[in-house]
Length: 535
Image 1: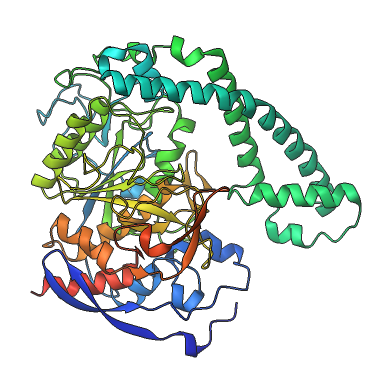
Image 2: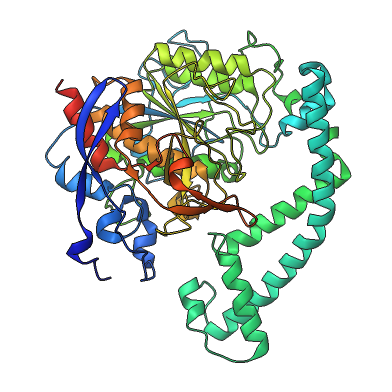
């Protein structure tokens, strides 16, 4: 790929205000940067979040540049990053070397050696036990209205009614989509004479046959969702099954939690779960394994993708996020577990619209703040303004005033610099989203020694968490609050109108989509961290 001409490589000096004084750092100026005309290559796509927006016109985090110019020959300290998620395949060859081991626990002796309340918690803890599926929070509220006030119950009931209406319409659409994808996929595979193909491959199809032309258009649209065809089919099938489940009211009849044996409405009932941090089914650990890989998979080892922090981190696996909505109790205890066992960064790639016991989570966030632990949280994938609409967990009960300064909320970026730089699914908010990071087509570890592209603010969050871990590794004296503000203030400002809110969205100034109006930049962040640490 040809690089952008030098006339576009100007850097502008700017003042970046941190939470603890003023630090001068040269920020990237991309105002004159042209929209990328050349298609991103397969090799670039696999690691686009590590690339540099100026050099490559791809809105990555300049991780490669940071390693090459700022971290070369430097040695950092190990930082424990807790992955609060669906489980992590700690046996994955590209993650195994980075897995945290509890130094105070003796494996397999059935004794709580470190007296932390969790027996044989060698690599973390599984607060879900053998649960994989769960209700959504609004379903739990409908089943037990005593959990909330009447207004919240009515909101949950209204959402359920809306979901039933959507499922009625969606069922027919999903069935039609599945048929169209299956038939079009077969046509294209036959035409290309290959089973796996990309948008670039589709562009090479020149046939004027009506069926082939139509199939090409359908598959281009399908691939625009950011998933390979095989994964897309799986997702459509899941959506269809979900629609049928909603229409049949099956979830409202289920009590998934009973096999765990605890009372989810009692925060003092903590003796539950087990030490199997992968979970009962490795396939169900896909999300958490991918998130962990973004932070910690090996760099330049000629397999899979590259981790942002890699050799500088240890991954603590804390299983608390099921297929469904997480319980407030599990999240609160997961945060406290991570803090008590030495995590300095916690990644939370989860979220929901109702939180009956939100104060438990708020208290856990404050506990993390008291112990100097940074929590990096995904903004959510509903293409909504979370300054207006509910999104939990958060650090502001009124959506205006933060009660803690150690939680940073991350929106998702697309790999195309231009009008679509904000991922079309990403939540946004001028007050309640802090900064954006790469979240579309992110290539990372998945269970059973595999790798996949996944998309979501779930992927943007660990990208930012990886940069936070680098800062905490090389500049360990900086506080969680300082690291949060470095990520925000050192980011690259994007001064252009962009598309938000999905298909029926609108154009907004990128500067209004988050508090910082910026995208995470590891190179600038480490420069700012260096300057701050010398003060």
